[in-house]
Amino acid sequence: MLRHLMKLTWKRKSRNLMLSLEILLAFAIVFFIAATALRNWHLYRESTGFGGADTWSVKIVTGDSKDESIPADVYDTLRRGLLALPEVREVGFVSYSPYTNSTWTTDVKSPQTGAGVETNIIEASDGVAAALDMPIARGRWFAAQDEGAAVQPVVINRLLAAAMFPGRDALGRQFTQTDAGVTRTLKVVGIVDSFRHRHPLMAPVNFVMTRFAPHTSKSRVRVILVKVAPGTTRAFETRLNDRLRLVRNDWSYTISPLSAMRASQMKEQLVPLAAVSIIAAFMLAMVAFGLFGVLWQNTTRRIPEIGLRRAIGARAGDIYRQIVAEQLLLSSVAIVAGLVLLVQLPLTGALGDSLDWRLFAEAAALSMAMIYLLSLLCALYPGWRASRLSPAEALHYE
Image (cartoon, rainbow, N blue to C red; front, side):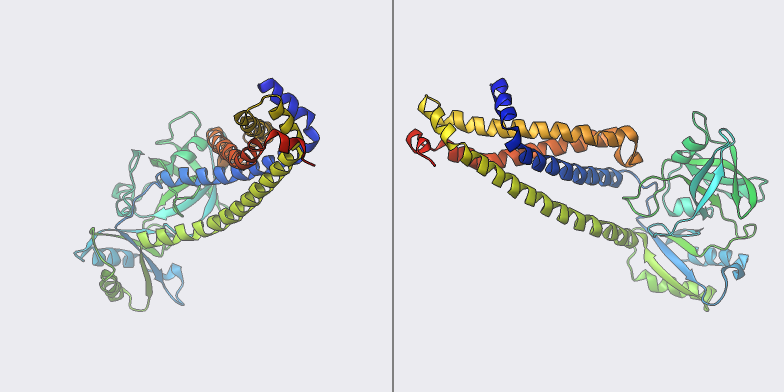
């Protein structure tokens, strides 16, 4: 049966060319939709590297004053004042808040390979890990024992550890960073599994966290992370703002829970994805209508052939199964051609980690199932209509 169907398909290759192209286009569209959806689903399910469910972000707006003019003692005063509130559990300072589009990058040099590695960087004080519920996979977070250390302590993620020290343990090792012509030595005191600060759909990147100490650091960070008691409502914002103004009344403060910032970032990411999905679904619907029309036309052209088969004893079910089987066979040919083209993406690494072999296999399987279902649905009615023709009606069809 299969050999017979392959012969029929080959003999009608000129007629089937347009149908094959339609199916190939549909397969490519479904594949990229599936790959994008699966990639974002995998990222969403992965840990961002921190919690922050009961953490609030406070951005300090100094107005006309320069950041460098913030006295070191102010940070201590802010920390003590906030910890005096019964709702506050921990306070930390960072150069920029999680769940924002802020990012800083720098180049570090691996002492093992001698190669430069680009990485994101953030300054964080001793209380940040506790404020963000950030688990440390190996080593430790910054502490008072790092005060006055000859080498700058840092915490890095596993991705940077693998890039800097391939095949070796990064904990306790040193590397260098050059910024504005100044080179400094950094020592790894802790390693985290991940730190995806922008949103849950952010692709993993190299990350290094340096210790912010107000009395020894030259920089002046402007974001306070405040961990509050579970169940604290937004009404606490007023009391928090009043306490901050007791320290510096000439500044203003932008206060927002990280949970609200996370929701805002997710909405920002999902809106373009939804728009692309709607456009892709519309294109897929157009392909389905085209596929149905071409299949209908091909079946209509074959009515005399169907009548002859019925006249020599073929049953209605045989005709029905033949039409559907031919369509599925043609879909298989188009899918194989599509896979030959698409497999070049993971082979060449053109899309990097965005399309690895696991994701390619999942997207291909989902796309194949979708195309077979689409082909089956488009073939059901033309096949049923052809099977209902009587031999006499079909043989007299013009």
